[in-house]
Amino acid sequence: MQGDVSAQNQSAAGNNGPKASFDPESLLTVREVAALLRVPVSWVYERTRRRGNERLPHLKMGKYLRFRHQDIVEWLNSQKI
Image 1: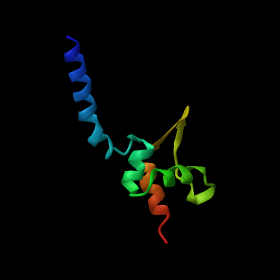
Image 2: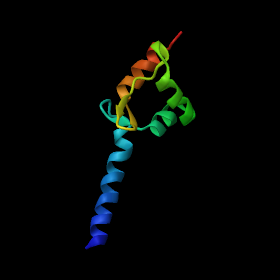
Image 3: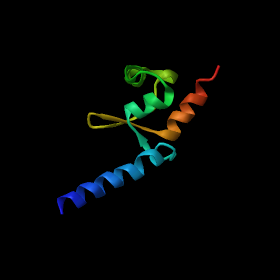
């Protein structure tokens, strides 16, 4: 019985993982944003501490940072020179 619950949790997590990355309303982790932008995780953290236009838009949920995919796309577009 416990194996069934574990298998369900793994399959549920696997089904939502890749699809969530492309959903404009999905919340991304710091690592996912770093992978999306192809930068180090430390760069993402540093950009959340900046002020002004260089600051990455994020949500703070307790000690965790989360990012809306659409906000990151809009931020990228605003950074064009």
